[in-house]
Image (cartoon, rainbow, N blue to C red; front, side):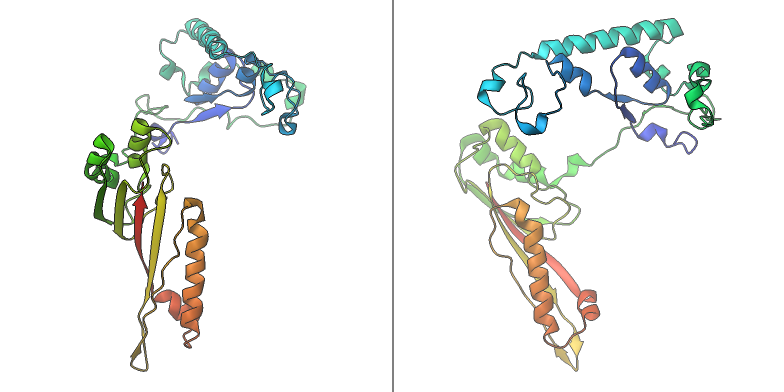
Length: 303
């Protein structure tokens, strides 16, 4: 990534048996920006590693839904916070020994690693670590950590329009109903509106059908995948028009009502199969059917 001038765009996370500040420093020297801790904070909360999390019989009440066993849980958030304070303190001590002022300066400095003891160990005989510990031959100005942030285009998200038009319902609980066009570049539609709804009214939200939105067009990725408590109506209109012996055939099909977003993929597949079977019965080839298929989505979100 450094050689191709792409390292500045990403964050690298290292994890796996991270327990001390020394582990964090080594991970940073090898090029990591972030670090994932799992086992150590779990032990800090009281886990004794009984390896029976899946049996619902955790003796210290960490991984169980049994109310009697959960009473034995003694962990507190302050314990985990204190653990990470110790980790940070050790990292600062090692950075001071290396003469490094900021953590960003530590990332990717493979030249500060003393690898002789590990490489000369008898268990490492025959292994080539030259590429792991290689220092890219680039100028000092080339970033070795993330310096650029990605613009996700949230300022132009369709949900801003939905929130603006739903303001009477969000502020005063009044019923609102409106129609908005949708395109396939509009992704995760409904997520930000649901976030505003949950922020103000919690999980229960507003009474049913307070916010009634009709969306006409073609839905984008993860459409309605992250909704608050809501009723979702979907129409998938599948249009097929083609000429055979001067005859034009149009197929129109609607998706049945569904209140579960998780059912959408199965429902759309069901409709696709029905349309294909319906059209194929009129003696069209499957290849020609697929080539002329167009999807138009009409949906209603009722929150």
